[in-house]
Length: 165
Image (tube, rainbow, N blue to C red):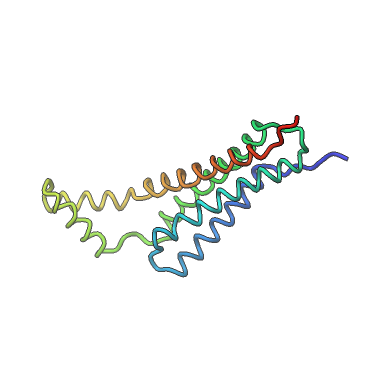
């Protein structure tokens, strides 16, 4: 009987589903999500999810795999999660979560003016432009907050391969 190996895409979808559910729950529990609560759970879940994906792959494929095979599977899983989380982050920032309010915009204008190198109208235009393009910042952080722990998880998962081949 041929062994059935779960695809890295399916594992990536499962990890992404957990991350999206966690993000939505945190948004409902906390009005502004504290910084530690925003990224620490994502880092831990991605790391443990990729390590688990590597271990499951190693068990399903048998003991004939080397470090490179398991690492590649873990990294492919990580790229699936990173892509899907970047897409979710873009949709969330653009359409789900509210844009900065007037008070936040005024605070940004005052911060720009305090730097002393912009007039009031220039500062207002810079703040409006930054609010429109805030998705770039959030998507970039989402990609790196997924790729780095995923890479470390893939390294650990690959290191768990047996040396007696």
